[in-house]
Length: 195
Image (cartoon, rainbow, N blue to C red; front, side, top):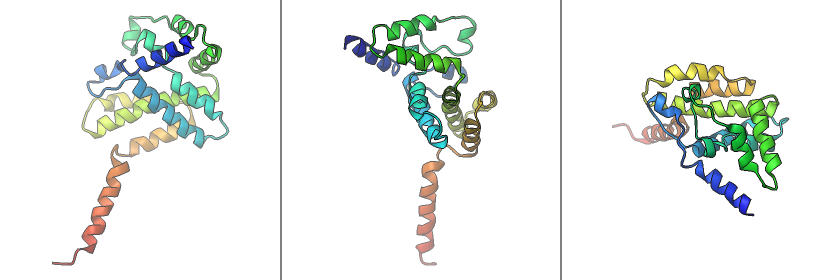
């Protein structure tokens, strides 16, 4: 039980680790845990869009894909030019003496290999989480996301990922709630007597 407790504290640490790429973007911020939740939720949605896939595997993989960052930090593409993290050691230390360590390591290894349909969807979910952030920042008036979005979109490999990205890019970040508010105001205006 103590190793399981250690694992839970390790996962909790992701709430305190910022995603480092936002500094280079010049706007926005999130923790690795924020990102992992969003990625896992996108994977949940994808599992409903592709019911032939192993939903539990896809969602689980997406949830734990950055778990080792609690040990090595979140290195962005610029930092990876100069710093090499020992991700293998971080994973070995993470799963050491866990009763389900092999299955946890298998999920992360499958994600890293990116060969199965579920791993490819999980990778796209990871990129879609970033696309959502970039689109929201762009809609709020930040200019730098316009430079970042095209290469991130090009990383998508699945049809489902590409379809979702297309819809995200066509949707305003606040449309999900603002549309209803505006529709209510129109109904109220129509009920007012002419003055």
